[in-house]
Length: 166
Length: 100
Length: 96
Image 1 (cartoon, rainbow over the protein chains, first blue to last red):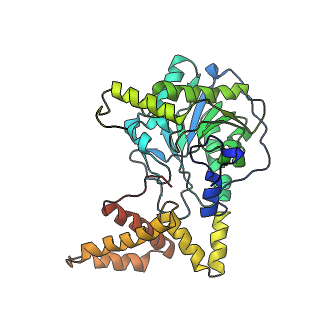
Image 2: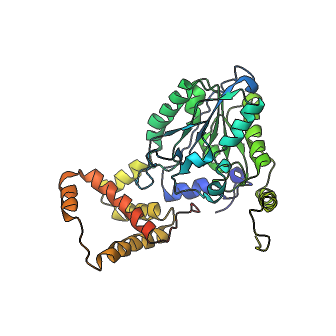
Image 3: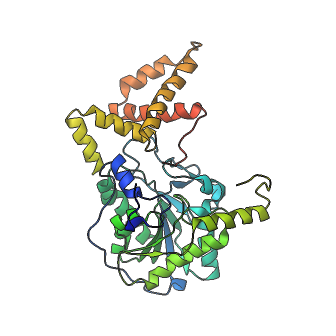
C-alpha cells in the first residue's frame, strides 16, 4: 500500500483503503462539513464527556457481541468514577497489548479525572460512553447508535466531548 | 458519531491514529498522533504523555476555527516507546536483561 | 453500505463473496488465517467427542426445534469463537 498525502506519518499507512477493500463499503466517506459548535464557557468551567469505540465496559455488563458478523450496535455507560480494575475490554479488531497493562492508553479515565481534579477541565459527566468499532452497516450506526449516544451525551449534561475512534 | 454530538451544540474533538480514515469521515475537530492502533494516548504508565495528548486534543475545542481540520501533535511512536520503556524500568516492571 | 454489499451477494448467489467475508471476519481481516480458523474450530469441536462422553442431546434437540434461525446462526458464530478459544491459540490480537 503506498502512502498518500493523507496518511503521511501514519504508523499503519493506507488503513482506509485496506479496510475498504476487505469490507467493501464499510468505511464512511463524508463530503460535507458539520458547522463547529462553540464552547459556551472556558474548558476549566465545562463538563466533559468521553466517547470510545474501544469496547471498554464495566465488568458484569453484557459483553459486546464480537461474534456477530454484522457487528454490535449497542453502547455501554462507563461511570466516570470507575477504576481500570472495574472495567474490561470486549473487542477483537485492534491491538490491546498496551491497554491490557494500562487502560489509559486507549481509555484515559484516570488522566481525565486528574485533569478535572486539577481544574484544567471543569468536570466530567457521570457516564462516559463506549461501543465497538466493528460494524458492517455504517448507515445503521449513524441512524441509531450515533444518535442514541449523542442524545445520552446531551442528557448527561456534557458541554464538550473527547472521542477516541480506535 | 462525533458529528451527531456536534450537531447538538456540544463541541467535540477526536484523537486519531489513522489520518486517512479521519479525512474521509470529516469530524469537526481532530488531532492526529502517529501511534499504534489502540494506543491513541501513548504507552502504558506514561502519565505525562497521556495527559499531553488529552490536553492538546482539548485545546482544539477553543482554538479550532475550521471544521474538518486535523492538527498534528508533534510526537513520534519511537520516542513514546523509548520513554515508556524507561518509565517501566524505573517502576521495576521491565526485566533489564531482556532486550526490547 | 457494506451490509448491502453482502445482501446483494446473497441475492445473486455469489457464495465466493460471502465466504470471503466470513473468512475475513473470523481471520480479523486475513482471509488465509480465517480459513485456518474455521478448520481449527471444527477440530476443536471434534476432539471432545472422541471419547464419546454423554452429551445433553435433549438440550440440543430442543434448541434446534424451538429457537429461530437467526438465533441459531448467531450461536454458530459464537460457538466458533468459543471453540477457537478452547484451542489455546488465540489469533485475535487486533493486528489486522
